[in-house]
Image (cartoon, rainbow, N blue to C red; front, top):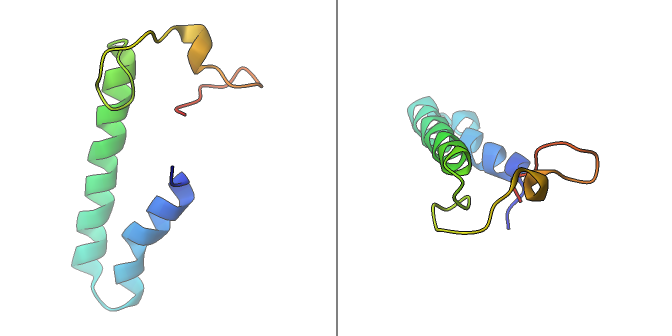
Length: 69
């Protein structure tokens, strides 16, 4: 599993190499992926869209915060 901050870094890296269009495309793709994961969770599916036993309690982390892991 890749940390989200590393996904952001990977998406933004082309901007620092003089390819801002590629960076913007990457960021929009990351946004689409996040929206898809959130929709799957709202539909009581697993993050990747498969069937599973997902309860609100199982999504909460140690601090009572929504966890997508």
